[in-house]
Length: 507
Image (cartoon, rainbow, N blue to C red):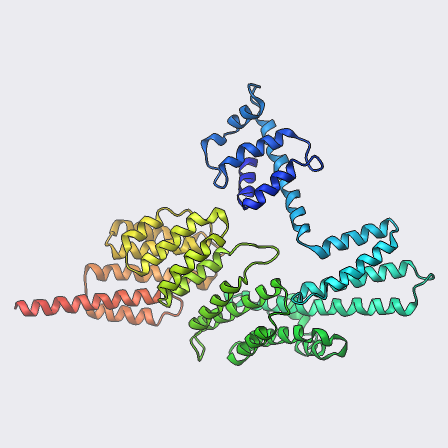
């Protein structure tokens, strides 16, 4: 429905966005319909959930058109008009935050209108703005390429007047130089993304177009060429950082490359743009997770990952010009790791400090999710249930967390009927989500299989069977919640031994 699309759209706005959008739709330059303004004023009282029964189309029609006969098509058209205005509003917001793109559009308009002096002045200003410290990265090279293209187009149009062939050749050379630089940076990102996806989802990328293209030349040498070339000396730190990132993920078993990359990133962090820092720090996370997954490492990458997360949260290396909120996945991963490392006070403080940084529409559910996670680690299982049952999440990872937690809680509380249904629901959830990687699906299915075995032992304790089950759990590589399963088995063995000793004493 158009209304639901609009509600979901506006739910993504913060309070500041709402005020700006109201100003936007009230501007006659963008909107001349008073009914659209009235529609916005009516529905905004129900932000952000928009779940009131007062939001029926008939009620809205009555408010906007008094006693006029109800017409559903009229209301749908108004919703569509308001949604389209919302999209135009986001374009305006985006342009406002992108100074270079706005100037680039101006240069184009100046050129079309023959305003040469204004064009040259604007290009000079654009070039000066790009020299601001802390702006380096892939976008920087792309912007330099666009600026060199604008200059080339301008000089070519004036050929035969004041502009010399040497000046045009210099513009072409700069244009090519920055285009190649942008290509190098973006190719490293592309290669890295392919490597990460192949590890995560067990994909075969050997015959991918990108890998076939890279086989044509030595990409490592190409990056070093850019780093050491005299004409790119001022940008050598960019290529050095990307080269070390490239080395880190193409030599993933050699941890020294990771720490060399991390040191280099810290060394040059004040030179890079916020977007670039978000990306670079995300790669530190990816490496630590891959090392933990493979189990092939000499240091504790759990603690290393926690330190990386702490630095990212402290410096807010998760916001950029596209996303202003802390992502649900990052929030979830930080919380889970802190609890796994038994940093309970830190986890509680993390929730209190960072809940407001999430998207407004998510805070209520994430708050209940967070408290459920913390209570679970403290073995307050009844409280866990009360929080879990309040959660309505769209996030896939959190959905699977909730299902996993429900199984564990029902097991601990001996709610056998609820446990049986929770296992079935969990299994069906996995079966119908084809986008889950094979390894991840096996990990969760193995957890359910061993939980069923645990349940049998819980009703009929047997130390020999417990030991056999523990061996199977320990030796199963693809298994989520392995630590919890082992703790449950050990707890059963202790209770079984206690019962035996008690029976001996009675005899």
